[in-house]
Structure formats: structure tokens, C-alpha cells
Image: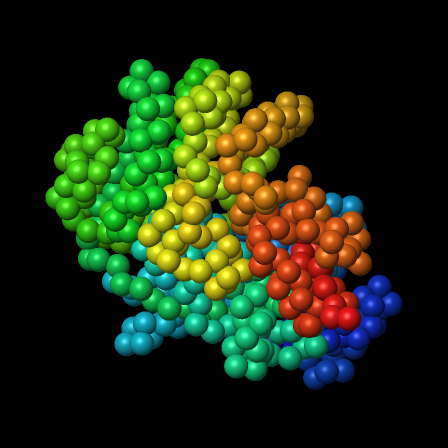
Length: 477
């Protein structure tokens, strides 16, 4: 919901005018006059940000983690604040679309502060619901309740014709597409209605560090054997990373969340994963919201108000790529990953376990297809401070990705849309065909890409909602 009653009208006019007449045929003054003729407020120019607007750069840089249709985006390629070909663009900023309404009785919200209810979401504190839900949304509840997108009950959006639609009026195909297919390829989302799921009053966290001397490789190997098949109340993320003390080396952290008390967690770990050596002293009981703070890398005793901090976060140069493991990685592959971390200064490799609810949901139920058979997601990430180090680090992550080719999913080699990777190929111009986009499209969506392109052809045939790696329109003959 919007903080200003004029904003939905603004969205309607922005989309319907731009679709009816090409954007570049308007001067700024003509565009504002056209909007004002639609009975929008006289100060409409203060709500729009064109490249020649005095405050354009300030607004752009105020929250550069958002996508150009700004809805709290999640884009590891920085497409939120630039274009690959450096063309200028107007910002449609949804920053003030942040009202939350909770219906505890019927367990619905957008999203929630209810004490014992939540909606599955990611772990990055600076990413809004638009960025998470539109492309899937993987978090610590993924094994228990699935993705954020799996728990969407309704959507209110503005389509390319300027119509405000909900689940019933938009039709089954578009409702399917926006829940994990990259919603900004199709529309501007105004509202997500989410299913709330129960979380226990007490949850248990643990963070266990292992070095090579501790047998880290063998423990990671055991993790991949058990993580997929653990009780769905238990989520254990594995993070291999470079040492943080400025010396060359690597270490691994096993970050666990158990939806229950510590004595139960300890029993499960002793029975199913004793190799990790979790002790009672490693286990920390806390409330659910404290666990959210912890996985967001805040101290668990922080005020929850810190999650509402919307100030500009410190930025870093980085590059990320992703994979899916559909078979257990051999020790050779684990050694490749470990040894690669000895070559750079600031890098990490994340393993996020699936299984549980994820294995029960059919891969065609939403556009996100990496379900049964996907043991875990892999994220490779490297960062650098000095621009002179860019080429070296880019080469590192790309070479590592190539080295992992024999060990990960194939035909297609999967990738996660929220870990966007322009190395996979992108649309070369606004009229890019479906067939030219298949390379990256099948990696993100597998066979669901065809249906997404057909939906795009139905609802946005002229590709108004274009961006690099947006879904291309596939038109019926």
C-alpha cells in the first residue's frame, strides 16, 4: 500500500502513457504536463526523477540496492542503478510502499511483526519484499515452508496498460509468473498478500567454525550427505571463506537454525550429524526475531528496530555466480573450492540446503524450478576494494565456476535468478527473441522459461518492462 493516495494514479499514468507513446517522444515538461492533465497533483514534478533532475543522483545513490522499478530489489549485477549500455533512465521509486497490515486470525500479511507468525523470506536485511518474492526468496525457513514466493496468496499490480489487477482479474498465468519469475519483467507490484506460517516461541541457533586441521573437508562432505535429509525444522548453511585476519587461508562455518529448543536440537545433531561435534555450549536459545537478526549478521540482542534502518549501506565491489548440486560433490570438487580460497583475499562460497518442503513442491507450481533433486544451492562470491584488483578477482570467480562444471547440474546448468549473473548472456536489444535468451532463461527457470515467455507475450508484447535479462515476449503465431 502507498503512503500517498496519488501514487497509484502516478503509476497508472507512467505506464499507460509510456506504453501508448514512446518515452523519448516526450520532453520532461511535456511528460509532466501530460501527467497533470490526468488530475494528478500540481507538485507531480517533485515525485518524478529524470536524469536532468537536480536531485536525480541523490535519489539514485540513496538506495542503490534497488531495481530501476524500485521495490527493494535484489540484483547482484547492480542493474538497480545503471544500465549495461549506460543509457539514461527514469526512476520509478517505490520506497514509500512499505505499509504492513497483519491479519493474525487468518494468518495473512505483507509482511509481519506478529510474534509467533512470519512469512518465509531471505536473510539479507537490506532487501525488500519486492526483490525477494519476485524472484523466489530463499531463507532459513525454506526447508520447512518453501520459498517466499510459495507463500503468496494475492498480488496487486499495475500492468502495461495501466490497470490495477489482483489475482482474480489478472488471470492464472500472470499470477503464476510474478511469483518467482521476476515480477518486474511483467508489471509493477503494489502489494503482496502473504501466508503467515507458525514459528515456535523458542528457536535454537549455532555457529560452528572448522579449520583444515579440524578435518573441515571431511565435515563438509558429511554435511552434503545429511543436510538435504535432515528434519525440515533444521536448516544448516555452510560457508567456506577466506580468513578475516589478513593472512592467506580458509575456514568454514556451519550456521544452524533449529525450530525448537536446544535439547531437541542437540539430540538431532548427535543422531544425524555427530561429525560436526556440536556441544550444548554451542547452542543458543532465542526468539524467532532474534534469529532473524543473527542471520542478518546483527548481534542477536540488537533492537529489532535496526531491521527498519533504511540508510545507505556501505557498498563493495564484488562478483557472484551460482550453481545447483544435484549429485554429491566428490572430494576433488571440495578440494578445488577450498584451495581456490587460498588464491584471493576476500571471497566466500555458500552452500544453502534444500530438501524438506522444497522437495515436495512440483517444479512447475511456480516459475522457480529447483525443487526435488536439487540438494543445495552454491553461491561463489568475491569482493575487492581497489578497482585495480577487479580483473584479477573477476577472473578468479569465473575460473572457479568453469572448474566446477563437471560436478554441478547439467542441461541446463542451473542458476538462481536472485543471484543474477550477466555472464550467462543477456538480451541484446529490446527486440531480443526468445531463442536468443534461452541460454540464461533455462538456467534460471529450466522448462518454465517457455511458459514465462508466453505469458510475457500475452501481457507485455512490446516489451515495455525491459531490462537486461528480462523475460522476452514470445508471441503466438
